[in-house]
Length: 136
Image 1 (cartoon, rainbow, N blue to C red):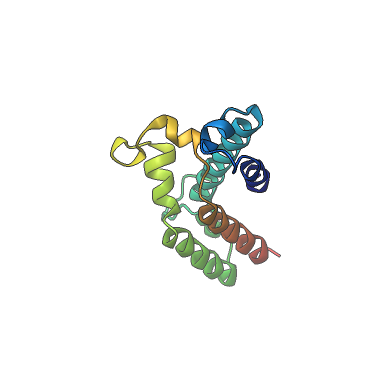
Image 2 (image 1 turned 90 degrees about the vertical axis):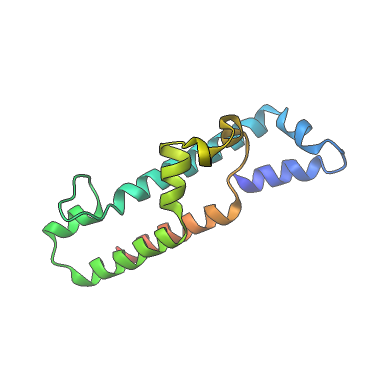
């Protein structure tokens, strides 16, 4: 989706008012909204999967490991969970997505009209790829 947005953005580079013109296209608004919503959903799901309680209450890896004896997989998931936290995606979820804390979130309209930075999408993608590899 970001590639489609980038191509549209490149077409408007000649204009001094690039952002305003680009945001006026229905296709652009749709791309941005979908990108933001997909990213938010993935972060929420990862947060649930990485719940780390002694007595898990959600369908999470912790819940799975209360029933499983696979120590190697548990160690691998714990490493990936640490990476998730190192990227601060859990704080992103807690402060900006799920709870929308006013001291962190800023303008609510800006949260839906601006693309999520590619670096955060790449971090989420990296975590998902590691999870896929762990379960093979």
